[in-house]
Length: 256
Image (cartoon, rainbow, N blue to C red; front, top):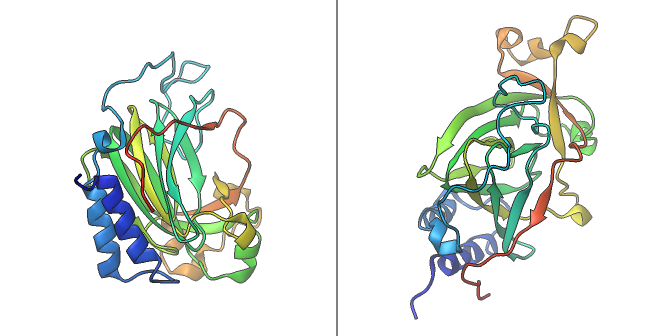
């Protein structure tokens, strides 16, 4: 029996992330990326077909056309998560988003993330912290924190797999589905509240909230205060209609 694309991905992930306690080398991550590139929707039991819209779209209750946003749309349709594998070193899973569903801005503390769009179109908005090694800010995610926008575009499959590092590449990101889509993610290591790797959600704070007229951007460069790519993010609880439900994975099983 030939080895499935999913099993090959697992084998490469195990060899890569079990051999390193930190961020693997660029060559090792490239092997994981290439293994992800070989995984197609059908390899994980998914069909690239339209899903029922059930009345959802880019329209709010006031009838105005919605915009791409890092916030979850009102009455957001539920998102499904398909679990493939998880251990202390890495996890593999798929997020399936119906049209207009969104995952708010969220972080991946101390984690390397590889993300592949299996099908569909999705808007991605991603940031990196301006001061990623600030211990006080790292200890209190609820405090407003300065971030730089590094990604703000639409991805349509097929496209290149994204690699996010713990402090660069867009480690804080949000997704809004423009069509039904599916994202296959590898997290290394996975979230673990017991060891301090919590998932924190964020929203943007207007600069106008700083009553003294200064938002602290000047210290980051002469032109930073004029740069719209610098924004303040604050931890928040996502709305109640943000739902990620456990789906049924119908693809080939991983053999550890």
